Amino acid sequence: MSRSICTKASTTWLLALLFVGAFAAASTSPRLHAQAPAQSSSQSFDIVPVAPGVYAAIGKNGVFGNGAFIVGPDDVIVVDTQYRPSWARDLITEIRKVTDKPVRYVINTHWHGDHTNGNMAYAAAFGPDISFVAQINTREDMIARGVPQLETLRTKTVPDSIATLEKQLIDGKDAKGVALTGATRQQMQTQLAAQRVQLAELMVTTVTPSTLTYDTSMVIHQGDREIHLLHWGNAHTRGDTVVYLPKERVVITGDLLTNGIPNVRSGYPVEWIATLDAIDKLSWDNAIPGHGNVQQGKAQLESLIAYFKDAVAAVKDCVAKGMTLELAEKSIDLSKDKSAFPNFDTGGNTSMIERTWTEITGGAMQ
Ligand SMILES: [Zn+2]
Image (cartoon, rainbow, N blue to C red):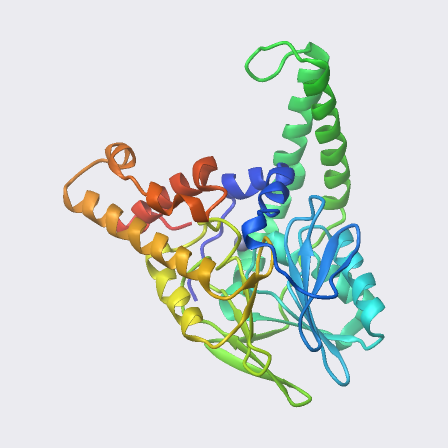
């Protein structure tokens, strides 16, 4: 088994965690807002029923990462568990408002901490009868990459960020040396308080790896409901699972599909297209994405497929012409795809071009 230990955490992903507010704001895009009936709200999640017994938990107020839960005749199946275990506990409270049946399976769509850190909350609440299910590569990456990444977050990334904010507040100047206004000072103090809370929770967070794995597909039979777990190869990570409920016409995609250009930093954009095409071929009405609101119909997915194909074709063309990455970034214009993605200009498109370049030119795909 080949395994690469990644001790260098993905900068973009970590920065995203430090500035979750920006992502929360992006997720409110009215264009994608689900018109679901009977939606209920808690402080951490909007609980959106998408089919009988099937609920999306859409993170809000800075809660980084969606989830879903599926209520059967005897038990509950949860998909993804958020970045902070306290958010997972909030979702358990929401599940308890719907049913008192136990959670028997937790499915992790991929290894990233904002989809797996909350596993420990389910283990604590439901004991040894619960199974944590994932594609086999995800289990390996939770251990080989998730554990060191969590360590980096709590020993370096978040403490460094706290120290920087504290120094800037003492000095009265921001990173560019500009004097703080009352408003920016207040903003930084809010950010500092949030990061201190985050650090305290990271100190008691542990990775809870999968206990049940599969290779390319498996089906969980929950009463007469079929829950298909599907893996089509490298995409957002090398171990993504799409959860597909054929009778209910629902897909739960993890970060293969989000409300913007998904984070591609541990992804494989060229290969990712095959997985997106495979999701497009399934019969469904509602997609629960990894971040952002429930997507009704395939419009956003098909915009993403078109964008991926455009980006890959453009990068291949630049590579064929012998350009440098710097020149390619200046010459590639994908602005016709821009309107579908709130994060196009805030790093989404640049990350996509750079990662695609790495994949096409055979660079290190950490
Ligand atoms: Zn992810």
